[in-house]
Length: 400
Ligand code: NAD
Image (cartoon, rainbow, N blue to C red; front, side, top):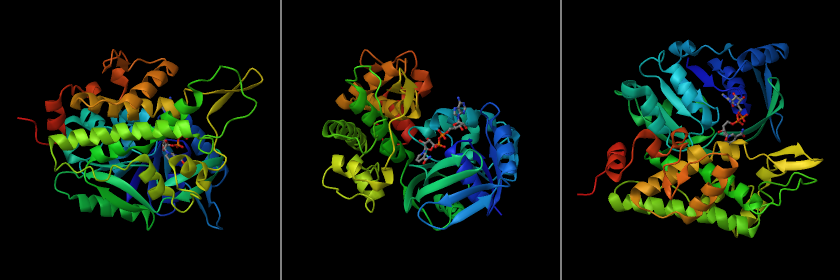
């Protein structure tokens, strides 16, 4: 029987722990403050977490075998599942590294961008003996109802893209079969040819900073009486921003193909293609991106992250839509573009605005050289500072 270590303690980690614990030996680890202790207490009080599947009578009640903050627990696990926001991936990789055994597979959901750069940096020489599966997103949309006790699975993806780097001695298929066995029938894992496809195809980097910028770039600073809708509030100007970021990413793909026509980026979708592939059944009108987003029933009622202030609501720019998706998404793509000499006008505009809201400096004087670059997934943060180094990391043909 598979033995799984689930990393994190938020919506995703608790739901995955509950779903998998009904079938496998599950250890859950949270390194965040006293979260492991609180979670253990809550789930035991409730006699197991209950996950309800929206729109069905299905419910799963279960609890992990162990909830801990001790990273040595990884010694006994053959699969490690990252379901913590990508801002904290490095913390978990670093804590687990001293104890991890050869052959262990790290499945990162979602990987966001540049996960392989981080994995190699932290695991060093051990990296080749370990497996990495970088997933494009989380298989489930899920939210707590009562922290540690009940949650709702709003939907399960039918299919999900993943790029696999197997441990020495195993094949990609070995890893995919093992992970598919864990997930069950849905979602079906679609193999992507390389981690760069997952990194550039990361939809979070387009949607979250793009919609936030579109909504708040001209905000007058006054509190709002109500929280505005995030997806259903997208107007045509905001949709243009998303298409602009997506267009910049397409240009980066062309830049990479220009280096090596055989480098396969066919799985990197435009944002419109991604929406239609992911939500075709819940979108009422797919004639434009704006309509596809504003008529997607899967996103009904989801609001911009807001804080109460001055008798109303103001945007929370430190929510993960910027604090996660800018450093581990847009910064990666902008960094790759720079190494390739590709211009990214929309990404630059959104990145400059967002870094100010986050009180960070990533892009400085037109280059990824700001003082906070080390906290990002830009290749520059890993010492990859020219086209040759990038080609060597990606194992693609370098220019003569
Ligand atoms: P979440 O916001 O619930 O995660 C919060 C957790 O992050 C905390 O419980 C804690 O474990 C950890 N954390 C927060 N602050 C920390 C800190 N300062 N130091 C260390 N750890 C800290 O997120 P989620 O909903 O569980 O989502 C996890 C990932 O999956 C995110 O990348 C999210 O974008 C992605 N995702 C989630 C959904 C969903 O439906 N929940 C859907 C698609 C993608």
